[in-house]
Image (cartoon, rainbow, N blue to C red; front, side, top):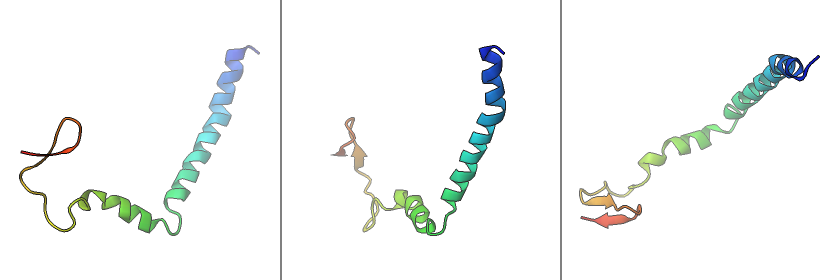
Length: 70
């Protein structure tokens, strides 16, 4: 059996099984008990920048990503 056929056979069977196992593991990890709080905190990140007041109209970022007043 040449190398290509051997690698093709491994990729068709065992690699598919390994990737399916990885997918099932990722799904179990994402939906594990206790992860709901972490996912809610992550989902609210865009809304936490200006907790005390809304952003002003003159707020902007300069080319370096620093706050700049216009």
